Length: 232
Image 1: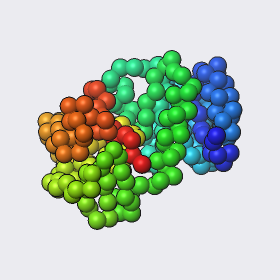
Image 2: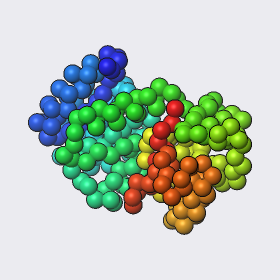
Image 3: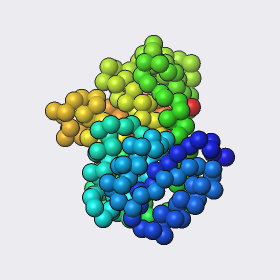
């Protein structure tokens, strides 16, 4: 099912979970390098050049969030957090640090594998706002032309609405925190103005969703942020 060339680095201090996840990924023909500490994980990631990193933030030598921050200093590799920490603030910290996804323990292997495949597909697409045309539902976004259509009809977005949509498209399939979206669309000075985000996200849903009150594509991760799903 998976490309044999896919390489994953697993940073997890629990030996049993590490063996379990490694065996599950290898059963999908993935190549897995594992580490029990943050520093070991950073070293392996630098040398193995993986397609994806899975990390438990509760590491013995350093916090996994700090590992993610260090990784983001030199690589854009997808990072999935696998954690027993289920508090909202822990998820927000990890995502703000640069993680692409957050899976809480206990977890199902099928779900973890599905998330891995989703991130690898997104990585393969290499969607950028300068070189791609993407679709979700009845909506088509022509990024080079800066145009948006729904059911073949042009949808007029304000400059801010369009910047917000591009941010979601660029990170399709990933949860973007409120802070990440505010900084990317409005700038660092507006990182706390969540009201801006609610208003413009509502505008986008009204213009692009079949039923704005029950969005199918621009979905809310309660207390954390937003995610664009169903992109093809």
